[in-house]
Length: 367
Image 1 (cartoon, rainbow, N blue to C red):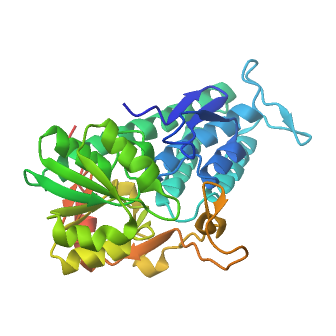
Image 2 (image 1 turned 90 degrees about the horizontal axis):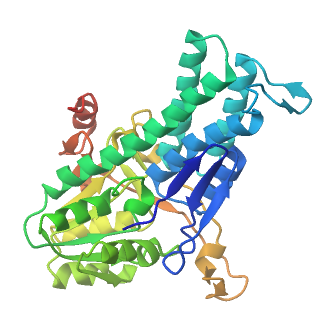
């Protein structure tokens, strides 16, 4: 079993510290939006869907931090009593700005913040302001976002497993498993679901330099799920594809443009090129909110540039000449033409193009 990633209780959010995995299971606590944003920025948690769920609760925490709760009145903050709908909304808007600034590429973060603000606006429009009732409505919305993520992961697992033949040998990159979501995961969720159907012969996890999500997290998840698996370094992928009979590459996504261009962890683009050369299907598993229809193509996706220390240091130890220049674009963009299919909770999209994406997103999920 994978430990709970987020544990919410009024006034605090316990977050599984993924920086310590796989060697230690420990939690850190966030009590407001700023602390939640810091946890997201500092990689205490990662994975687009999980970031979105945490952001939703970060909005709730900010309301709880500002309000006294017990008396149902707003506390005095900055010399101003927050006791009105206007003040409540300003608090949420400020919290949203803080959270959105934590990481720029994953659209799930922006989706969750905007959805919480939309819920707040709808509630405030329909009800006279009451702090406790307003807070309860936002808590319910954060819980709903979390439940929807769990359900979406399960459906993606079913759809994705249906694409794989028996005795499949698959390769995945980064971590798109349970640790990246509140459910079974996206890409790794497809693998574990297929394994439960006896479709997986072997799974390969690339280490995913420089942050090593594949080495620290994905291979740990696969082992805990009983999936026959091996860890490989990133530069082994072409050799493994050529010599080990890989049947499919399955990855997650942080943002997908309207035309299907997909941003995912750095190194994904290279794997897609290798897969095309070797005639291997390349699948992207991601929930529908990952698709950003406002972006025409992948060139408009903002790529997060992280600290070069994450390249020159491994586990706190310098692995390159001191003071050397290093780059760390955290993501790259895979052109839609290299993607065999997108797997969402609404179904499989193939060929990957704007027309098919819009058609699929318009579908309702059967209850």
